[in-house]
Length: 180
Figure 1 (cartoon, rainbow, N blue to C red):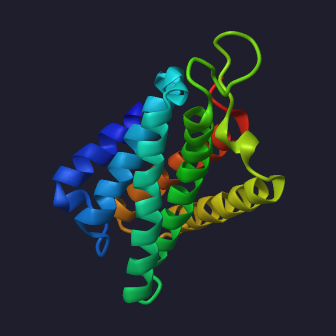
Figure 2 (tube, rainbow, N blue to C red; figure 1 turned 135 degrees about the vertical axis):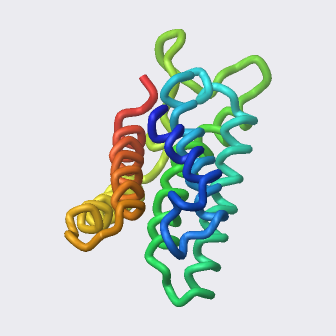
């Protein structure tokens, strides 16, 4: 994820590397998302901080709303719909955990199990919601791979498709496997 984060950072600041029609806003959301994912993978204790989880989850909830609004205003741009799926998965990974921690009595963790063990947000989701998110992420992955495999796809779009596929795979794994 660090490599993808570096690529997204360079792409954000170098317009010539951006996919035509995406705009800086979606590039910024991608950068925020991949940086958060890298942080979640590199610093598993991030999941233990309720305020951080709620803050980031709230940001991605705003991202879901923004992408839905943009998709509606731009007549269902696929990039915004794919981002909406990814942002929804980020909310699912962050918010339930943060809400459980925030609701725990002072001095007591909402986490159960062995010391150092962190509960995973997807564990608090209904199985149907988790399944729907995994299926939606699978569709995003399929769309990314289809863009990657088209012969007439420009280089920036191919790089974007690789980036999106890697982020989607990591997100699905994080959603199902948890931080440990």
